[in-house]
Length: 178
Image (cartoon, rainbow, N blue to C red; front, side):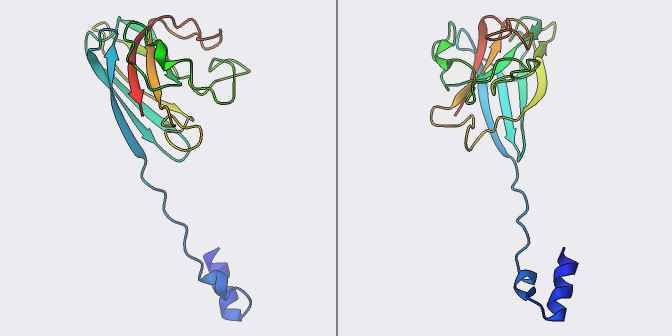
């Protein structure tokens, strides 16, 4: 495109103003957010680090040994940044779901914005996982809206189809995103 505009500028057409147009700005570096993950006793068991890019965010979950029961666990973004009711983490409300989609990454009427892939806790209860989501960290519909959001780790794996949470069960851990 620049060569074409330069050629027009040389010929004296209307392009000289276009030839001087500034180059598009380079994409800004992804915004990073980090928060501790707490269990139902309020004890820190790990961290969640979120990097927000232009078209997706990447969530890195690190849970220390003994943090979770071994096996698969559903994880979801919930609508409110509140982990204060540690017995059940219900103040975090339901999934982030601005467009009222059905739950489930495999649901033809879904997924909702809170749906994420399952993570696996090793035999020692540790997790090191990285997942991506199209739900933005900031901006319209973002996780860091007026009341924030929370990352919830569930007791069971999510089947990614059944309602309302894919059979993921009790809430074992929570992290505030604000």
